[in-house]
Image (cartoon, rainbow, N blue to C red):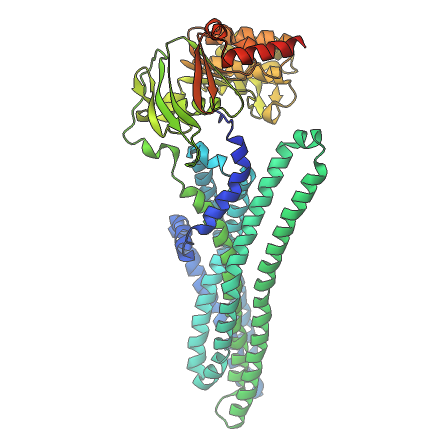
Length: 609
């Protein structure tokens, strides 16, 4: 039922994302460990499965260490000695070892995929749910596509990392530890030779990972920015074509794509150094083992089998380091995505200040009073300045004035999409700042200039006003809204599926459905924001009739630029620069020959012309 009402804040909407990104950059970066710890909390909810995965990783790691050991022993006992009795048995043992090794690895991957998908499923549900609880200013300062990117791309990035990296990192640590222990047991001297490459690996990895973290974070930011622009242009395609701005849209898209390309280039380029570095060091380690091992074997200090075993272990020693470095790099990318998701989850929800709030009475009269209300979107300038007025139950109050005067801001404050800076707004004598927002908004109905319809049937869209309404009540609301006749002419009548945002029906028909939705909600206070603008004359008559039925007995606030639609309003408030400069009925204000008189006569002259 409630769709955010926007007005002069629209011009801030375009510049706010840039401002928000600047503010984000100014914040001290959170330690990556904190983000990893938060991801671990989600994983820890599947403790039993994780324990099984850990056991399988340990088993596969032990089997991975056992294979080269058996090969080295076979070389000494059979190949060097020239005796092959029992060799077939060793081959069978090796086959069993590597079969079990593959089976454990396959099983642990399947289990980990299930854990990862459960984790990201919960993250995505929590993120989307949290978005529904955030206040309107949060959305006004961000591109919608950029937020979509966080719920989809960033969480998918976490998902792919959890599927592979967690097992890989844990397995690599176990394999590395086990390999070093076995190597020391076999030959401490050869172990020292093998470990000579570790400092080189450490220094190289430190140099690379110090850079990849910020590159991957920039890549995710550029991706979100690009997604936001795509969503904005696709949604506003009609405007793009009306003003022939296709080339400009392409140029901007190309520029943003270039930023993503450059960020992705450096992220992938620097991270691509890791396998090259590790392969080079791996070959260096193999060369050292072969050279030093050969010298030791000539002096009888090690056997040929041990050299073969160490050659295998050198590969197994550098491979876990290689895997760790690669997965750590991938982990940095996932952490960058997770940080963007957690930024949303860390935002304070709209109802955070409602601990002491209470419900409005079930039945309210609809008396509304503004007492010296002031409000500003930004501290530098006041949008609403000391506004005071009172609407009796059942009265119609019209708000008129130039664009940007503050008309819709007054409605946003009444709806508590924003909180007042000074003063108070009362409904039936109750300060709405002490009332739960949901309780207040349930008493309100909205019909906006561009009423949003969801993809779904006509009946589902009308029922959005009150989900527990029966089919009969939905049909009755459609009749009262003068929407019944056009609905019955649709292919499947009330079960006709509308495309997103009501595509397939006219603007006037969308307005009639929005009025039916508001009628179904049974509001005590009604908000009409340019509900009859851009409508043909015949449809406007139908809408006016429906609105009169809807407004009967309800306190109504009407925002209008066409002054002929509000002549019967009980009060007309003329708003200019955030202040009420005139107040009275249509006749009273014409008699004053002030600002309202000038507005009315100028429109009358335009109509005659």
